[in-house]
Image (cartoon, rainbow, N blue to C red; front, top):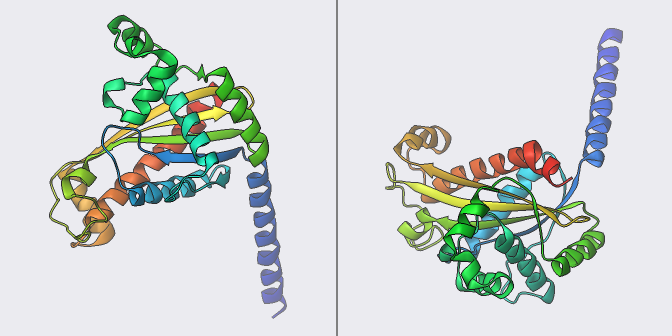
Length: 262
């Protein structure tokens, strides 16, 4: 009995120490604001899709960061929502990988207003920008000042913006949250989600851009059957890809992004 009580005591102490260690690691983790997950690509995506992806990315970030969240997916955006949207578009407009022809009207208007339409349609300048892929860059000075103020407000060191350029599974099925979300006859067909993300150091305004394109075909089928069963849904397929996307996003930020914007 005595040995049993000693064992229970030892396990309790171990659990307390582990909890304290986890808390210490979390308290020392970088502070990041998941500012906006939106779609500035030429194809409009449903808000429900963005809300789902927002939650997936937030959960993955929480494994390595102290995360502040702000939901922007509401019927009537607030003034601050529009400010964050402008920051997001500014990061896109200055990026080395921005392609005007694949952006929506709102994004093209903003980019043209700060750089000019001709800048993005100049082949030589486009080629020069492509060579800078992976290198950090800066926001418009006025936008950088706003980022600093918002960073102070939210008490964070970094902001993260995610732009979903395209999700063709959504387009092929008429919306994964449409009339028949339980459809599972897409096995063997392509599921593709294109995303780019922007990590901003709020004190310096330096931006790191990363991008992922996830393509899944029939090779995914066995994985999905093992995970969800034979009658997996379109939503299951999309969620599988989103989880993979979010995991790679966080891994790349930890590996390259933080160092790039120091």
